Length: 109
Image 1 (cartoon, one colour):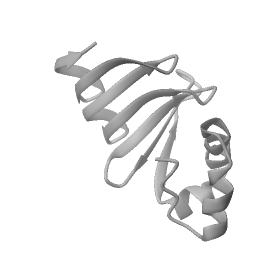
Image 2 (image 1 turned 60 degrees about the vertical axis):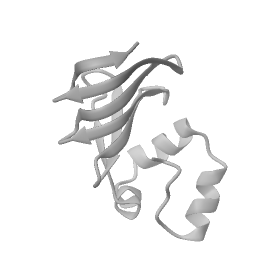
Image 3 (image 1 turned 30 degrees about the vertical axis):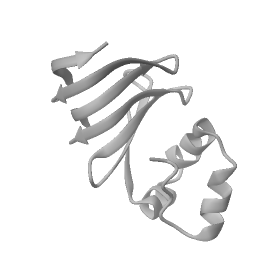
C-alpha cells in the first residue's frame, strides 16, 4: 500500500528510503499527501491506537500506533471485509475471510 506511490519521481525516491513507520507518520499528518496518494486514512488512535490506510479499490493495511503492521487485506467503509491477513508482532496469526470487521467463515490460524 505505502509502496505504491502514485506521484512524482521525487516522492517515489523519498519514500523508497523510508521505513513503514516513518511513511505512516508522514501520511498521518499531511492531508495534501493523502490526496496525492489517492488514499483514505482512518485514525482510530483515540480508541484503539490503530491506523487504517486503504485505496479506492478497498485494498489496505492497518497499523498500530507504533507503525507495526496488524492487518493487510480488503476493506469496505473502513471495516475489514473480504480476504485478509492478521498479524501480531510481525507474525501471521490468521488468514481468511472477514465480514463487517469480524472474522467470518473458515480461515487458517
